[in-house]
Image (cartoon, rainbow over all chains, first blue to last red; front, side, top):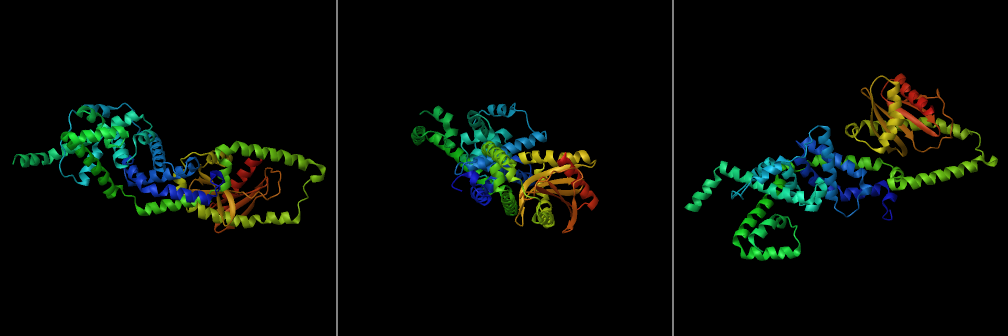
Length: 190
Length: 277
């Protein structure tokens, strides 16, 4: 009403929330599937996120980045959930050390199925995987990812760079194990 | 730009994070360096594959039935919440609203204290209004069925969350009952809702295996009375539920459940005495 949030009727508020937030449910679910262990957990997380978002909607500025706002809420809820379950990891990052040991850019197979790509991404350590999902899959900027994960931008850049290397290594390993590399060499030599 | 320089920023370039001027330098380098061009093309192709693979894989597609259910549940909750409750609880407005209410209350007290402004004796119309509790009790029973029982999975999920209203009604409703009864009484949810035009504050509890609703009628049209212990409680059976109603100050309170009349009444008695204390 008059563009003033606290004068809005509940119908007007729902209409705004429905238009702004609800179309993002598929995007939220896609990210939730990387945070949760299964479909049920992911749906629970998405539902909690939307209920929390609706409660906090008066704090959201219409027309700003609703997707980043919702994703931040979801990550916060997930952190609390993991803390409660005792599943929260201490932030001393052996995964960072792993990425530092990768000395070269591996050759990738020419053809990759969706399943192979997903499987390789699932094998990437979590800290790197989260950033790859938020950047390469969901298209968030470094700044947005830093806000969502509550880490410095430099950490985002570092994890993304290293994570992509680990992903390429996973895919190159897969290719070697399934003989793709050998086939390519034979074709080149032939 | 040299190859080493390009390698240092290639990841940021892949993520479209570079400034326009830097992008131009990158374009020029890639035009003239086939090796960097080929390596970068492979990285970009992989990035595109990852994005496409996730978006195509059924595992990452939202279940349409879940999406529909989510929207319906959210809408139901949103339209039940009182706009005025949001107004009153909006943090930025709470202090000025409370201050305004205090000022009006003080002015009203001064006005009413004047000998010429004493409230009239309880009229027949007001006795009729109290009798109207029965009509509201019917709506309270309907609201218990429609709101508490129908949406129980949602209330159970939200039982673990903390918010201002929950804290208020835990103190006001749940704790006095927990002190009075030996069986487990759990606070599930507190919100405002409307049923057939009647607005209530609705507190949902679980006592053992029974779901109990405590409704506070928000219309505040009853004449103020001094609530004492052993106040009158009206017991009725509406729509198959036990409804015990009593008055607290100028508000009607309803306890609704499928417990026996005696058990439901004992909950209402415990609350009535707690409010009067």
